[in-house]
Image 1: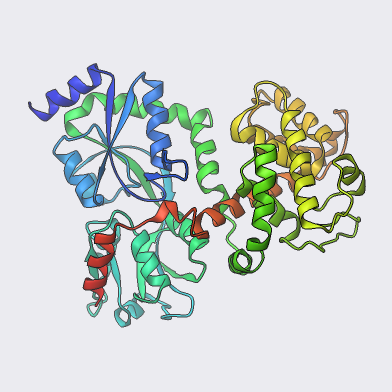
Image 2 (image 1 turned 90 degrees about the vertical axis):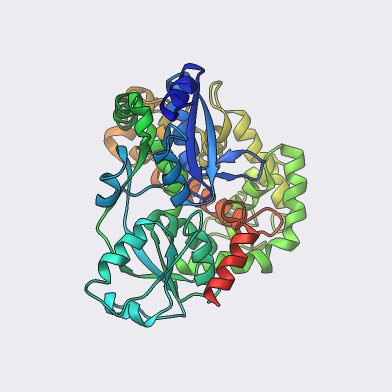
Length: 450
């Protein structure tokens, strides 16, 4: 069957075929065994809006994805594909949905790169057929000594790992992937940007041209109604504020402090039904897993309980890790259960975290402000906008519980999400799930790099 006919038939059957590659920002299997990724969620949202079921066709690397979409083996290619002049001449791109810069990435203690000419002095490899290879190829016309290898890989992640492990001096990757990678590899340094901002967009198969207008209309609506902003925040929000010292300290404390506390978090998870990793991430935000932590206001212990809260949940010794973790988890669960009907999933959990930090009354006030502004009061992204308004008299004077430092619970939840992501990447028994490397690919990389 001709590709155009086959793709049209698939649409008639209600199937959207999406070509992609493995990677932490595109397609991976999460800790629950489910297919996940930014591109996965984006494609699912589009398919659902059209009454279609999405089927992901995962190819070995980006070049294979592009070859497949050119051959009409899928309706769209969604793999964090950068729009370049060369690609635009070959493919039909949909609307831009993300912008990135291409950056040179080296290890913090490794090669020192201050300008393009310094790249001639380092070992440099990039993903084969990538926009990075195009960029370096163009740069080589002005830096003739520049040499680089092209490696077939699903994303730049395997190469970033080799840079971290000092098996490669430098590579090139997109800024959003680097932000994610630095959570796992805090020694990575980005000394040089090679491009201005560039756009990511889907490639629409020439044999599926009937989708072009539909895709364009959906992206325009997704920009306007906040779908893209929400997706962007969920996948990239916790990576935007990279702090090398904080990440390095956290990774060290995963080995130094978490092992003796983990059983207490797991026991509390059994009692409350809240994943132990979320409890541990919250506890790190509260106390850095220090059982003797105390604030100037008198809250203390692993979960930084006030004396009234400790009494409420039956904690006699706030500095006892087992009691503090059990009490903090119990209190969080009570807040979780007090959320109004209609709040569920991570929205419910994130709001419970916010209430733990700022109080339930202020959370109710933020919901009131969300309704006034035409936002969904059940959605955490809405409260992320309205909580900070509680520090402005124009708003806090109109609600029941008054003034609050509303920026703090927003940052509190953001930090918890970030620490949870770091745990998923660094704990051997649960990660790094989003960045696994095919053993065959790792062997090929080792042979190529010598």
